[in-house]
Image (cartoon, rainbow, N blue to C red):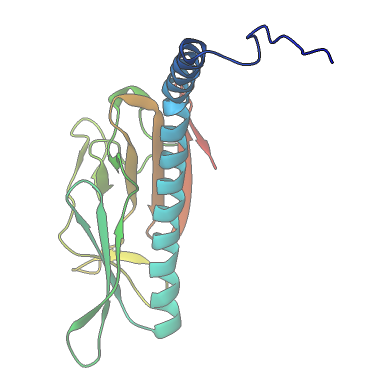
Length: 197
């Protein structure tokens, strides 16, 4: 009977396995670092779609329930929608927060959207054009039961809400509202202007 001789080359050594795991770890880390701007683009898009949806929801609720819906912009990432109760008081419909890292943010290099409702501030309603070029944001902004956007004095308001991720200008997004009709539009920055989504 013959016995076979083993030559010891039946697998990987511990050192070879450790080197392989280290190389794969470096490749994964490099891939994640390369994908970070793409992830931020997705977050900015998500924030813009959610913000646009909240504005449309506020308007549709005002029309459907024949009540004023108030918009409050708080901090750098929150929108609260409240509905006027009859005979008095309000009920919170929604406390909406932008996705992580996305905030109310505007880059001067992008300029204003084609609607030209103001780019002087991140949340800009009742914009007065140059030479002043400023926003006089009223404390109360509301959709009426006919779908129009007004201030507390009943004046129609046009406005722009700019969002993005700090330090990444390609994440710039904007949502605009035409006060006379309540029409909501969403834009993204191209680096040389804005394109409606």
